[in-house]
Amino acid sequence: MNYIGAIKVKVENFCKHSFLESYISDNSCIVDCGANHGDFSLQISRKWCCIIHGLEPDPRLFPNLPIIEKCTFHQLALSDKRGNMMLNLGQLQCSSLHYKEKENFCKIKVETISLPEFCGLNNIGKIDLLKLDIEGSEMLVFKKLEDEWIVKKLIQITVEFHEFLDPSVVPEIKAIIKRLKRLGFYYLPFSRTYGDVLFVNKSFINLSLIDKIRIFVTKYKRGISRILDSRSISTYNSSVCSKSLTVLK
Image (cartoon, rainbow, N blue to C red; front, side, top):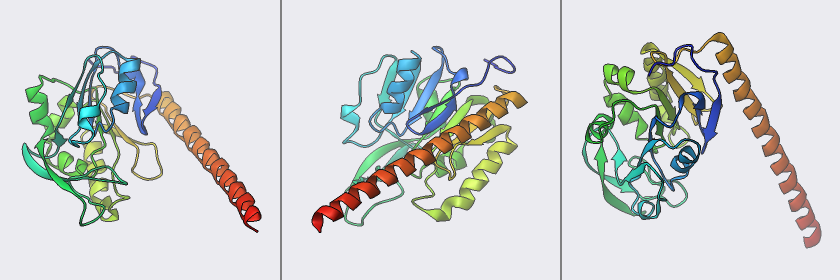
């Protein structure tokens, strides 16, 4: 479906992933990579009764994922190819194929798959919204996707990049952004870092100047709200600490 000039733009955010909800419907196909506890898929399903595929390789999380109408969870890790890799099980952070919290933390072999192979196996023609929160594997995923496949198959991509775990990947992130812009995607960052980034395919969604202004306003309203919330929490914590210190005296 081509949405050019058809719909008033509205931004939604689930689990710190922003996307244009105006272009999601009951007929959409959502792929949730890094499903974790299933919260993103669950919120999508509550708002739109659409087809959802969730990928979660962590054997501690997968058995406890919720049962969701029209949603299928797959115990797979998204990567650059089909095969097996060692998953570093996290304690404070999410489990990752690429990062580990400590040398002595547990690892487990998990099955991996590329995005084109996954779509082929599940008869997915187009992905209306691809969510990537895969703890560093997003680099490999983007690197191995062919330009033509990206342009024809992906409408929106909401990504959490993980430069906070490894700042050395920032040039690689910038290269991905540059590439997707060259392929005809809008680049819409919703955070001061690369933690909440949205790419929108112009072949399917053409944003007007008014749409871009709405998105800009939404972004900065949220930013101001986050700043005010963090200050409130900081003030509260300072007050609690002050009272505690007074009691200790």
